[in-house]
Length: 372
Ligand code: 9MR
Image (tube, rainbow, N blue to C red; front, side, top):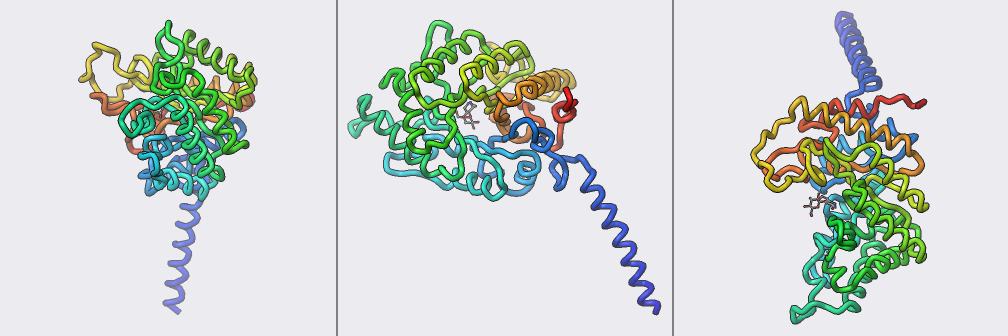
């Protein structure tokens, strides 16, 4: 009898604690734990929210945070030309595939990044067996082979591709970036890349993707190029604003103008690589010449305030342009790691801190008046 009484007491106590912990799970708002709301849930009526990842993040705490918060992925590096196609007759699929399988397994969308870029392109692409620069015909054939193989490989996983990345120059008086692609092929490589991608997967949404898209001069050049492609019947469907911003740029006006201008061409717009550097500066808050590298690398209250303002403004604008904007993707997951680190100072550009906990800016982004 006593034993039964004891068992009942233990059972009652167990049930009490179980009910407490399950109610915490359901009502709790602590991102990173199961059954709580994530960015993707707050924004479910607006657009998918994505994150750029590396294969090492598909395990443990990073992966839990990804699945809890996001509903779209981009491979930070694994699907770029150099990593995927190191030698002419050799593809390396393992890393890209691990991201594609993870996305499929968890029901996440997947953006393909990218098919043609001046950086991270393998050297062999531009050289023949003697080490001489290849002709335009050879290079376009190689580009076609690469794009066809990669787009077909990921056809059942990737819904859209950044087809050409960063082809426009930052200098005011130079239109196209004088990359190896441009020097060998002229501007034609851009249209060709879109045609090859479309032929390989007619359903894929195809983007031109660039940074500094809120700079009036660069925006105008991108607009002219994209307009010309559209008018020539080239299969281009969207423009990616990378969104490597900083605490002092862009302004609300310039951001709105970019969204309006590109969508006026009948193109969808996505923010493809969002982060807000805590350092004032050019693209992504990169060091400006002469700027001290050893400046304090703590996340100061002043940086935090400025960053909150920028994130709040950006998401206000994003919500306002729902329908024209079809996705927002962060470039990296938490301040634990960002591509902006390692320039002689630590950066804190994301919505999750180095312990993967939401920053104040996170709450600014998710607490909004849906009726507005
Ligand atoms: O985040 C990427 C970093 O790990 C790579 O070393 C770098 C190589 O140049 O590319 C970074 O990602 C870039 C993206 O592919 C295109 N837009 C600019 C991004 C930051 O440089």
